[in-house]
Length: 272
Image: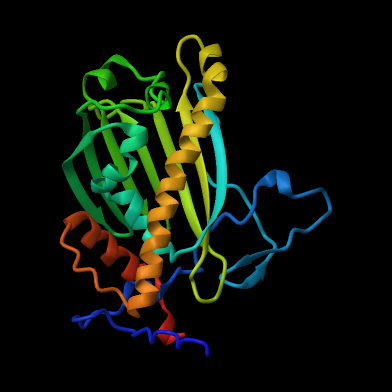
């Protein structure tokens, strides 16, 4: 006998607000659906957005992507969760204990948060408290300048529907040692899976050959961090499905701002 599927309410538990996990990604934006190398001349490529077939693809305008000072790392992966879990995972640095095996012991400090029409931003400083860590964590910042080495600032921003993360010095015009652009594209009509496209730009050190030399180790390190994030967000999705709704009583202001943004610009599936 098959167990009954949980009934998922359109409303959050104990709240008169719509359930964020029932808010679909707004299709009236540009989303990546494939890499340019996957498209052959005079050929079409069958892809999907939220279960609907799509064939048009173009490349985003990503800062520093065409700069010779940076080396890009491209990735995409299928993740079994609602896209909003991905947004929250990147925006909230309080989950760094999840990566302690790779990053060592880090203490996040929220320096600033801000929001505006269509965007939410948070700035953190991560204090290194020591502990064993993957050697790739130090090599990621091999292109940092003196200002960043004195005091680094991590800026995470959601410009709906995209997210960026950069690590730079404290000055306003500082060039980052690392910049990430990422988008989450629903692949099924139930919004239970998404394909995450990312472009990670790493600034080259003065001796650029050193970055090429350690590139395989860096790629393994980045994949390992993403694998731990994937485990966490898919566990959150399973908990949501078992409970039949979102029972999490969120109090962190950054995530509350983010949820408000996702609600405002997303599409309520109940109203489709």
